Image 1 (cartoon, rainbow, N blue to C red):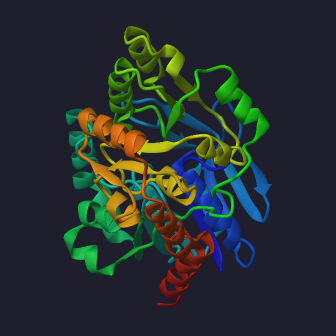
Image 2 (tube, rainbow, N blue to C red; image 1 turned 60 degrees about the horizontal axis):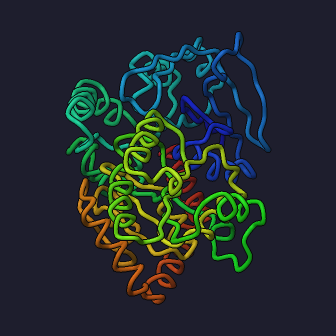
Length: 383
């Protein structure tokens, strides 16, 4: 089968959707012809092709429009619609409904090809008033029309379907959860010496509390900092490790300075994936206080790495974590503080950790997930 994958960003760009696409299509490209159409890096003066493994990638010269508070820029790719027409794939897989509009839809329909759409990001809710309103208006005016026009609808959680897909289309929507590389993200008895030196030699020793996410309002990291500042005032030896980039970096640094906890905060970015497991292993507790989360890959990595997890009970999180972690309310740093204090003082049930690991292997296996995608694609093309 010839499949054309549409997303404004692709590997080596680091993002949740991009990781999913790379993991799935690296596997599908072993038996199928995969072409990804995406943006060329910012500053590129022309479009070009390259390959990653068996995946053909067309990177189009693009303009990047930065919108205040938006997690990613809006991307205008040159010659997009003609490129899609020339590819003439059996199925076109859209992975970002905020980037593709009626002209693109018409081009694909004009050559009588099938369209699949995956909901990686559900309609915004409880982030902030401007973001929530923009998301609602966008989906009302266009997003849900694009979903309705697609031949196949998949989503990364049941919650993403119920909160985003038009009511008339819910019954024909399929859930395909995100996965985790459980062979990579697992408990390692020996830590990597480079990571060990970074974490132990330059910073105070203590309980390491990890969060892996973009530094944006919706990820809720500020509530971790507030909870930890309270623990530090009670003389607990705790540190916060955040792996991610984003617009709130300076805000977090200012908060840490104001609360005399700068030496207890470490923010890292651009960590190669092969090193990420060592950061999980060098940590003691994972906190995931997102205000909005259709399906968090970092949560799966933490559960697979056998870390105690504290997380908000929102979006697709309960579908993935089930009863294998502590739940907190959104925007409630007091609950994070109490949960951290309980784990530090009383320990954590190892059976919960082991059950989480088993769940990741059984339900969030990338091989299984890739098979689910291709089965749905083949049914769609056939009918």
